[in-house]
Length: 114
Length: 116
Image (tube, rainbow over all chains, first blue to last red; front, side, top):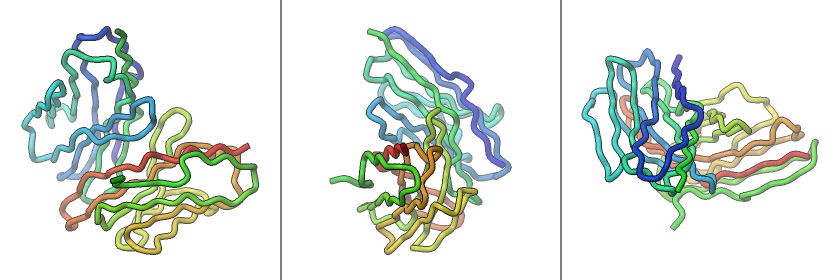
């Protein structure tokens, strides 16, 4: 069975602070895929990143960066110099070759105060 | 140019009614999904269709029936609505290239269903 744990329910930071959202996953698949989605207050789900299990390279996209570590089954997401527009619920998700549907974590609500 | 669209965006109805939510994607994807997001924001898969065939059918009441007239559309019909059906329903699509890979799922804007 697949499982995604986002232990941080809510995080509040002040603008320009760096913040890391944690994601820990469980799967028996040898090949799997990890995702992050953003759900702003308007409600839509916005795709941020996808990583394959065989590619442990970290990725940076502007102020966003992702740290994938198979040894600890973690796929953490860091926002550098946070902005008010980053306020949203962020979901980590997992899928495998045997099960294409996404298994989502419970989400982390990030509030960035001006 | 909306990639995945859903109608309606809001749906308010009485218990016992039957309602449908429509989903269309113009991404050329061959797989479509329905997810339910409950009041605590938890997202869970309900159904998935690949080329008009049902490939995932999670444990949902049989009052929920997906229908895929073609690979660009996946509608969700709900019979005898109950209070507990109130949630946000998201449609998504992706391209399953082959059995050894998976692709990104892109989501529609969601339909907020309120059952009174």
